[in-house]
Image (cartoon, rainbow, N blue to C red):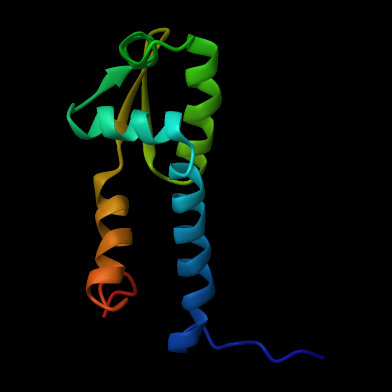
Length: 110
């Protein structure tokens, strides 16, 4: 029988936060995905075809990379008709990097 952590224990939040940050950094480790994030950091919202066109990649390749970014929580997708609009989850990205600047206090809600 293994010991379970209390949901109120400070150490109970560390694995989930660490796993979330690992997903974020894994998503950002690919140059194309990093370029997508950089492009969206300068825009409020862009369609998938606009992003693909500006980066010089196919829409299919953008869709492949956008799935990874969305699974990491970095990409917000809004559908209007048949067009999907993408925006950057700036709060998540800010919290992720703030965790390093504040010694993890801000990421963990302290």
